[in-house]
Image 1 (cartoon, rainbow, N blue to C red):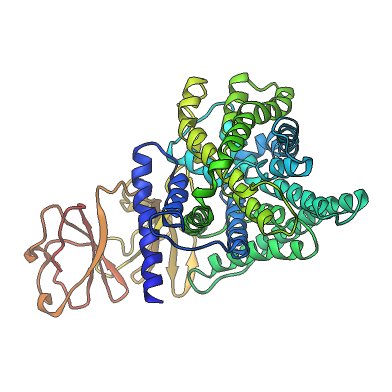
Image 2 (tube, rainbow, N blue to C red):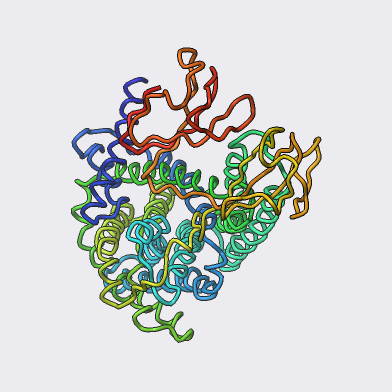
Length: 536
């Protein structure tokens, strides 16, 4: 057991440090995770035997729930809604058109069985949110004509449609029903997905607004639970759980609640480790020795998908909106395939439906080609199509972006011998940029006015714009030990460049000066340069 834990930790560290290398050379990070998985697999260097497709399907499906939910949660709706019409058409009609075109190509050009051809088309019909998000953010691709929101909303919402097409075709291959049954299945997938998605979105938003979580972090646990249940219940009734999870994610992610940015950061980390696990496992389960016979059909499908099927689908949908041809070209090229396609291919392999071709490794090769070629060249294509807009900021389309620093508050006490005691607010000097927001007096909260007189014992709350740490200073605390009890601040031997910001003593806050005598258990709030070694 210990060896397995060491191996898991080692693999995660390899993925994390390897991502630094991949970014340095301009390679998509998610490609590295797949390649590392292949290196550790049974055909790789470390020879880890793993071919349990059913287990892989269960793990990857669970991971996909979080990724799709966060695709909605991390999208800023105020930016995305202006492009929602085009994005929703691309994620629905565009996905179906792409699957149809690829299915026809596989059937009439590659001579696949029609059901297998259209099954491959369905599996690879959706673009990958994780890949698209990662490239837009890491390369800071500031695009014209609201292209970033279009790509984000489309890539986040088209997986449910690809999943729906895949299970319908698998049912056809198994002979489970007639045309009427498949129409009912389609209606249930879409109807229950939308119905439960809307219901859980409403309940999730209602809970976030009215439930006060007493323990730190419980709000994040609650949101995770909502992500899971929003998928599971509609799926139980035959609905599209991925669609419901995405709708719930958008609603909850765009709810204005305390600690919102912390929630987004939590999901950044959670989906980060989920993507590492998912892409590594997808690389682990593939067998490079079996991929030789799939290279040619996979390459042909990838070329047709990239240069014909995707551009044609995007053109037919976006041209009626009078989209610029350069935008159509970029949105077409940004249709990167990723984890969801491989997850659906695993689902096909684990299914009882008979297939003559090695669909898993064909799809795996298509994804490798897409991530490596399209992912690496997307920044170049954006420049060559003149789609870079220096006046835009792609980070504004994500929920963890803020246009300005948040307001922060500090509490000060009015002392009897202080200069503020007995003075009216309009007569005291307050540093520029600060505002007295509240006065606490005898357990009551008072709204301050210019004519309000401050009394000894009052607690005043000052507000100001928070500091955005540029890593030029490190903020930390030092607790005074008994050997420094009674020392003045001027007598402390502090490293050069260190500054005492304030002193916390018995619940009070003191403004420091050189003559203040320190007491044991005083807490000094310090600002230091990053290279300063603090001597406690």
